[in-house]
Length: 151
Image (cartoon, rainbow, N blue to C red):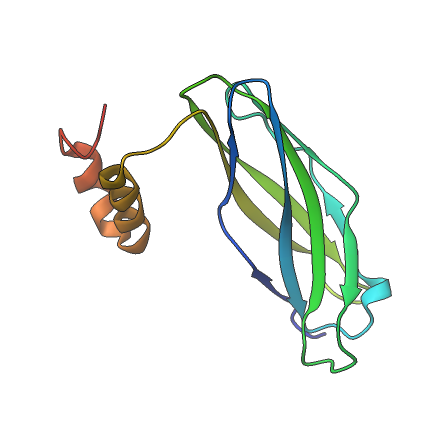
């Protein structure tokens, strides 16, 4: 048994709709290493929980190898549509994929998805979120701060 390795092209995936009720489509892309035959890779998409008033729907999974070189990852793409929401609001959920390959243990991966409708974050809040992600030990300090926590 070899280990299957999954590399996400982007995490989180951010859906920005201009106003509530509109929709936005994006591709969730990942690269899978450790397998040879792309045609034998099966990807099961789990149902996506809503994120507040935002609803998500995954389309047909596309699996392909871009190169004959087996050291190159297999390209997996899942189109996801986000719709709904409320103006000025954000929501977060996750897309869970189960990758199955013969004679291998199934591999589960999760991709965070953030949706916003008619919502532009001020620069200070974007930076606070980035710092919290880069330095997990700062998350609680940022949340407790009256300015940065933005209650």
